[in-house]
Every structure is written in C-alpha cells, then in structure tokens.
Image (cartoon, rainbow, N blue to C red):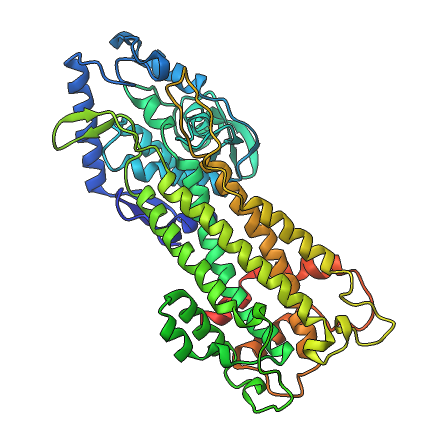
Length: 500
C-alpha cells in the first residue's frame, strides 16, 4: 500500500478512503512539520505577550472572560478535553475513526491552529499502528464535533479507551505495545483537538466515495434492466444529451450506451414500444443530476479537508491570531442534504423500473418473471424495495436548520452535520439493497432473452451474477438471494468490469 503524504493542502476523499479502509500509511511532509513548529512558536510568543486569546489564556464558550494562568495550562487543557467528552454510543467504526483522525491531522498541518507538533505526530503514529480511539457517534450539533472528537484527546492523554487489532483496551496499554507515551497538553492544545468538524467530514469522505461507486454500478444495472425490458435506446442518443448541455446526464448516457454495445435491443423490432415509461427514459437525466450533486459536494468537502476550521485562527504570516467562525460547515452540509434528495430521486426511479419489469404489459414476459404459473417468484418482493424507498424519502428531509441556542445563548446556530451525514449513509445502504434487487430482476428478465445477443458489458455482468445466483425456477428464500447479490456488489467484481 503506497504511503500518503500529508501537507495540509492536497488531501482527497479517495486518499481518505485508502487510509481509513485499506490501511495506507501516512507521513507528514517536511514543509508541514516546519509550519507546525513556526505556528507553535507564535503561540508561545502570543502567550508571553499576555494578550487575552480565546482558548489560550482565557476560557472557551461562556467562560471566555476567565483568565487561565501559565502554571495551569496543562491542567486547563486536560480539563477542557474531559469536560467535552459528552458523546453517547453507538461508537464509530474503526474506518470512520481513521477517517476522522486523518481529516483532523491534515487540517492541523495548515498551521492555523498552533497545536503542539507532538499532537499531529501522535495522530500519525496512531494511524500507522492501528490504534483507534472509541468515538461516540451521537452528541454533535454540527458546529464543530467538539463533544465527539474530544474522545481522541482523552486517548492521547492516557485516559481513554481504544481499539487495536479488534480488541478494546485502555490507550496506555495500546501505546505501551508500540512504544508510545501519553502526551502532556499545553496552551491551545485542548481546543485544537476538539474544535473541528473532523468526524462528520471524515465519515462523509468515505461515504462520497461509496456513493460514486454505487452510481457507477447503477448505470450498469439500469442497462441490464433495459435489456431485460427490451427497451427503447433512442433516449440514450448522445445528440439529445449534447443539446441539453448538462454534463452529468450526457456522461451517464454514454456509460450506459457503452455497456449495451452489441446488444440485441439496437435491432429493429416493430413490436417494440416507441416510448418506455419515464423511469426508463429519464434515468440518465436523474442519475446525471445525482452525479453533478456528488461532484459539488466532493469539491466542497475537499476544501474542508484542506483548510482550517479552527477558532481562533492563527495568521502565521501576520503573526496574529483572529477569532473566526470557520468551524461552520454549512457550505458542504448543504451539498450532503442536496445529494440525499438527489439519491431519493434515483431510488424512486429504480423502484418504478422494478415494478414495470415484472409487468407483462411492458415486457411481454411472464408476470413477476415467474417461470411457471404456480411459482410466485418476485410477487411479494415489491414490499421490500418500496419500504426501503419510503425510508429514503423520510431520511432525505433536511435537518441543517433544526437548531437550538446553546452555551448561554453564545452558540445560537448550527448545522447538525454529523446527523446529515448519518442520514445520507442510511440512504446509501438502502439504495445499495434496492439496486441489488434490481439486479436480481434484471438477470431474471435477461434469462428469457439470452438466446439473443446481450451487450458487451451487460452480458459479462450477467455471467458474473449467474456464478452466485441461479435462475429462479422454484420458490426459495429471497432474503438470502438479496444478501448474496449485495455481497457481490460489495466485492468489487462488477466495479472492476465497468472500470476496465
């Protein structure tokens, strides 16, 4: 696995995925290390000047007017960590914890938080040794994940629990195994650890990569459904999409056309309907819109991953420190919520295609794709995918405006970023199952047409599915079939096919 070099300026969501899910090692660049040292020296210079600075030598929140004396810096910063550990389970997965840590590590390297250089070095060491603090997922209002990522700080000072090699243990025990020691905190360190949207941003980075892969698969599955339907390919004509000038739908149509290359459905068939239902005709437009919203959200999130969200913000070149509200993540949270709505449209369209695919009036195939009149086949499966779609439609309702005025009315706006990301993740998981069910239907329908020539990629995909899922001849446990196809989608075999 190639090492990922972190500079504070070039981290991508794809790299977050490599680090968090596949264990790619990380290394801080020399330039970033020097920036950390310069910023830390500025912190000490400002403290020595005895100018009141939020989170340095005065308190935070409603305690902003309380002075913190130098001899109490260590105790104050540890107490800040302890008092901000307010999250409640469930706990984040190891890969989400890793994504959180790399997201915060990279933003520390901008030099705008003035953190002790030992802290980002500790983040790097914990990532490379597979030491993952227990981080609760609930308790953030999305205006910095202060009540959740504080648990990373608790581990760093030797008071929290971590997971290592699948086992939970005190952080001190894990550190001892790899030759690390808990850290002592200095001025600004506590606030530097807790004041970031790293949990929501890290989890979102992984999710956006997963959604992109699912949208890739959805176009292949749609192509197979269209082949099973014996549908009309005219709506895929690039000349139509070029006139519309929406890049997402044009690229989506091109991909689908590529998958269908060589298919029988391009042959003249006087019995074929001139128009298919909109759920078939409009798929490139709908998937394309989702792709454009995904690109928008990823662009905004990568800004989040490579810039400071610290308050106060260290202005290294000007040798000053300035109060800021850069911890407000609304810019990319709105993208998350818009993407959720876009995926709801994708889900609804897929469900409508499924209903049409088991209706003889549209396919001229057996009802519910059953091989015999006494076989139910997919008759009752409609309840499953429509119930999943109902959940998606509720989960895509925006939550970023549902806020309270907190902390003595100082913190009177927020975004619920973590909740928005968690809702998007639930939408993704439901949609993943819906597409697995569509793939089951598509291959069953294609089975009736396989004496004809299938598309270059749809035909290969059909064979891949048939290796794990046989033709539905007699009634059987469909729950197990769904699980089998979900595992196939997760295996990456179909993704590798279309990314040849």
